[in-house]
Every structure is written in structure tokens, then in C-alpha cells.
Image (cartoon, rainbow, N blue to C red):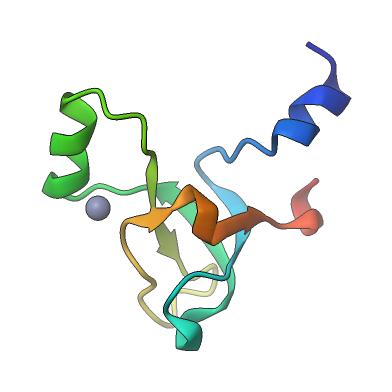
Length: 81
Ligand SMILES: [Zn+2]
């Protein structure tokens, strides 16, 4: 698979910088995306439901970000492309 095609798929990998634009407006902005570590998401994962959720981490560790952010709520930042 070509690099261009991978970019087109816009896959988000753990540690990627992303822009959050979900329902919590006050948290819109730049975050580090990591797989959501909570029990709820692990349980969903165990059932094989293909709905990947992310926990968003402040790159500057100054505030706590949203948990269980859906894939549709985040976009990989062009800064790390
Ligand atoms: Zn979660």
C-alpha cells in the first residue's frame, strides 16, 4: 500500500497529534491521541465492536483531555504528517 493511500485513509496511531472537534467545545484543539485505557472501552473492544476510542492527552501535560473520543471527533494534525 502506498504512503499516499495510507495518508488518504487518515489512520490515527497511538501518539499521533490530533485536532479534537467533538461535542465538548471547550476542549477543541491539539491533543495527543492514545487508545482509551478505561474499562468501558476495553469491554467494548473485547466484544469485537470495531469502534476505536481514544483518550486525548495534553502534549504539555497542563490539563486532562476527553476520554472515549470517537474517531469521527478527531482529525490527525497536519503538523505530524
Ligand atoms: Zn474509554
